Amino acid sequence: MDSALCWKLLCVAAVSVSLEGLFRYWWKRRKSVKEVLFFPVSLSCTEGVLNPGVPCLCPLPHTDSDLHRLMRRLMEARRSLELCIFTFSSPPLARAVLLLHSRGVRVRVITDSDYMATVGSQIGALRKAGVEVRHNQSSGLMHHKFVLIDKTLVITGSMNWTMQAIQTNKENLLITDDKVLVSAYVKEFEELWNEYDPATYDFFPETDK
Ligand SMILES: [Zn+2]
Image 1 (cartoon, rainbow, N blue to C red):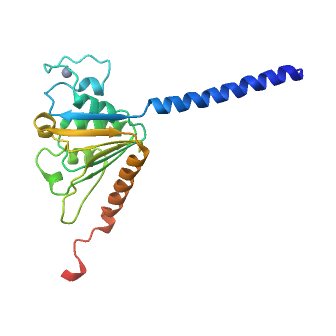
Image 2: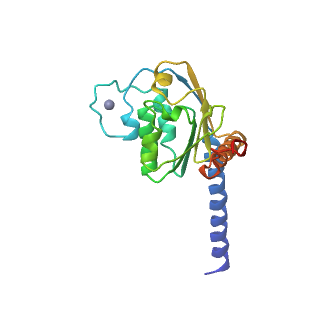
Image 3: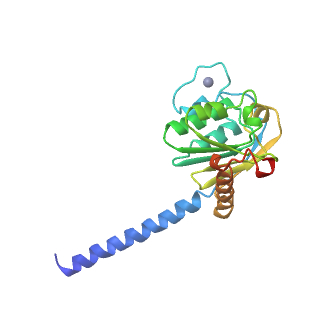
């Protein structure tokens, strides 16, 4: 191969590498997420989010809502899903979480010890399926309601994962991939995860002995 051709090939390679870099930068900027969801929403079928393209013949209306938008965000998880949710009793949201777990997404749940035992709680079903769950053990509620998707997206707001909250209450959720905000929530999750490690349970404090 002569040297002129060699140079030409090198130039083409250099241009494609820098174009790829530009494309990646543009794609990342384009993907910047700033979204707000409001509830309540009226009851409608969410099967389409879990099984896209499969027609559903159930009698519920098949209209899109902010619950669908929330579930579509959850279904974007490819590596990890961290839930830090005070009360979790919503069957459609539990179905989404179980589906992600069955796909090999690492799901970790932090919840409140009192409310996880209430009627309709989905925590038992998640644990039965092998999802890791930890809860607070002292006074003071574990009152957070936030979710981390692949540690790159946070969903946070007032809403508990209950049908009451979804269909009746005035609630809001903010979704962002802002790195500073997401990393603050990742830190809080990891700190609580360690604090609520069952190995550190202290049911019989020294003072009681
Ligand atoms: Zn349906």
